Amino acid sequence: MRGNAEAHELIAPGSLDAALDLLADEPGEWTPIAGGTELMVAHAAGGLNAKRLMSLWGIPALRFIETTPGNIVIGACTTFRDLRDNGAVADDLHLLAKAASWIGSIANQSRATVGGNLVNGSPAADSSPALLVYDAEIELASVRGKRRVPYTEFHTGYKRTVLEKDELVYAIHLPRRFARHRQYLRKVGTRRAMAISKVALAANALIEDGSVREIRLAAASLAAFPARLYRAEDAVCGGAVSPEVIQAARRALLAEVVPIDDIRSTADYRKCVAANLLEEFLVSLKTEGPQ
Amino acid sequence: MNAGWPAIEFVVNGETRNVHVPPMKRLLDVLREDLHLTGSKEGCGEGECGSCSVRMNGELVNSCLVPVLQAQGACIQTVEGLACDGELHPLQQAFLHCGGAQCGICTPGMLMAAAQLLANNPRPTVAEIREGLAGNLCRCTGFKRIFDSVLSAAAQTEIPMASETHAR
Ligand SMILES: Cc1cc2nc3c(=O)[nH]c(=O)nc-3n(C[C@H](O)[C@H](O)[C@H](O)COP(=O)(O)OP(=O)(O)OC[C@H]3O[C@@H](n4cnc5c(N)ncnc54)[C@H](O)[C@@H]3O)c2cc1C
Ligand code: FES
Ligand code: FES
Image 1: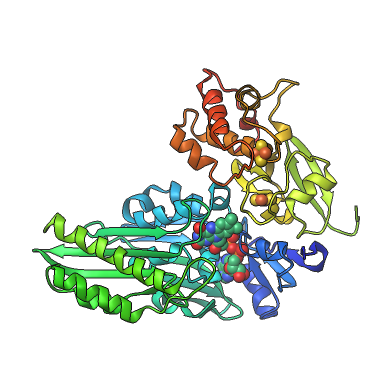
Image 2 (image 1 turned 90 degrees about the vertical axis):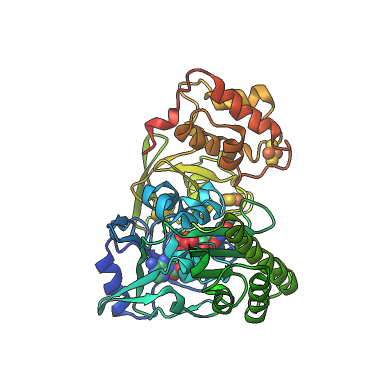
């Protein structure tokens, strides 16, 4: 059943402060809507439960990319189009730029926001694996002030986050320290455009003297929410990448993931593909030799 | 029309328009029902097919996913705004010439996606055309004639992008 526009209130507070005041005055009453590419789809199907919505679209204080020598800070309402167009993101966070280019279509990317992608909390969210391997921190704002949480602690369960009722996602902080890392991102879906992933794996690794000094692995669609693969990382970190290490890493990955069976794929397929993606990344480290 | 709703104002194809509609009403429905601009089509209603594509502030959007309040103050171009002084836009001429339209349902969206692409990239490769139109589905043409149409429009030396007057 098609949703009825008259059944929903929508207002535009116009500024970040006004939006936060509204959330503080009536906690739980107002649902933010940014690009609407999740909420309007729910609305189309008559499944939008929120009765009172406030628009974050067009609030300049939430749509920015700020670059300092050490960090890139991305406002919550930055669109995936903005991310694709930004030189600093392309240079220093190219996995994020790549993920942005995969989100839906051009029309989707010009509306879909990175904050909406995170708060929606889909296990398959395309920006998540890249943000996880880049050590992102999420900055939340409320009238009580701002606080930062590591992205690894942001999701607490299926479509659940640490966001309090009076809080908005304000920005995402990313350190610029991965230029020397080997980087990898691959999404496996039904079609290149417009397809939600069956599995996605992001990775980066710092190789020194033929050894893996640092490694971060993160996956989408392998658990209730996007997450790092710490056991597989431990299986690789500290030594050279040998065939034995690759096998151990595959086993570690298979032991720690809990993928779902759903309309897009089966758990077994997801596991198999994820292990293959990991192997592809590790083999690329081995064959390229020490830097 | 319900005068009880606050006014929402935006520019469509160069003309300032005012509507009094529920703010959650989809831009697509406002264009079609309130402004009688029925060129933009509804295929899926959920962002998957692109037949409702319009340009808003120089970006391509699916108008089925835009609550009209978020179009407040925006410059919008629909397929009706492509032709200029009774002359079809070069893209429209190319679609006619190359057989880029059959039933026509996807065509307005294809034209807007193609106009968006050419505004940013006047000489796209086939791969770039495929990417630019990847969010627009067509069940008739098999896509090749659409890509040919865009290539042919782009190959013309001068592309008077009517869109440029409304974009950015
Ligand atoms: C056709 C189509 C294809 C898609 N393809 C992909 C894909 O390939 N990969 C992918 O990952 N996603 C995809 N999506 C999903 C969607 O586009 C993304 O999740 C997008 O990033 C959501 O952002 P938004 O601003 O549009 O969200 P909205 O719908 O505006 O909001 C989503 C949720 O986030 C909340 N929210 C938004 N901003 C904030 C904030 N600043 N603070 C607190 N809460 C907030 C809202 O209340 C809501 O719960 C697709 C969607 C469609 C329609
Ligand atoms: S009708 Fe809007 S994308 Fe299909
Ligand atoms: S011409 Fe019929 S859907 Fe494209």
